[in-house]
Image (cartoon, rainbow, N blue to C red; front, side):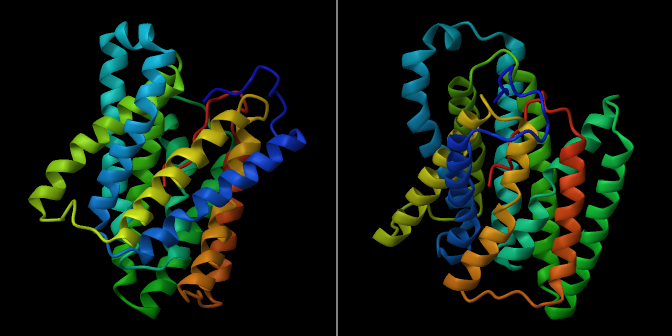
Length: 308
């Protein structure tokens, strides 16, 4: 997803139509964690089906519109698309199970640290990180310490979920970093259809080895899988891709941070997961740190939300 040439102001006001599309996208993505937490389907099985169905939906469109591109992909492009697909599968394998151990609020907040890990990955490859971004990283990591400390005091099992969500965010950053190598030359439909397909192939043996059933679900369970695929996997990220044509990556990334309170509110109303008041300062620290990191980034650099 590459911002349009007009997106040169990091915090410029986006068009009204983009605000509407961003609102729909954030709402679609915010339903992901509560749906997974409420589902009785095994997390890895959910990951497999949303990856497989995501690929099945996007592949015909990619073949119809980008057939020649798909036929002429270089070894470099194929290799990094495959690596991105593996990392996406591992992200799902870490983050989705976290929702069985900790709350939607904590898991969503911790997995949203993807911009922090992406910045540190970029620094390890020689990129320059502004001072304000380092301040944001420090504030966000302080928020992690506060949040995990509160979670352990409530229920020691929450620490397992918190660690899984943290690892999920790291893998999400690695997925985006790998994907950006391909996205410079490969279209979004081609990339996503192939990366989702690789993710499904990686998750299939994991599901079989761990005995996580892949069929025999009830109608409501299939409906949950379909809602996750259509909502977060396709609708949310497709609209984000559309918005990035005319709105900077910085504004888009800041808007996606609203997934945190959105998912928390949905979980509180629907699942009764009302977070303790003590968690609020931690969430504020995480949010403030992420805002600083994102605002410090180059608005022309491709950006992608966590693939939740």
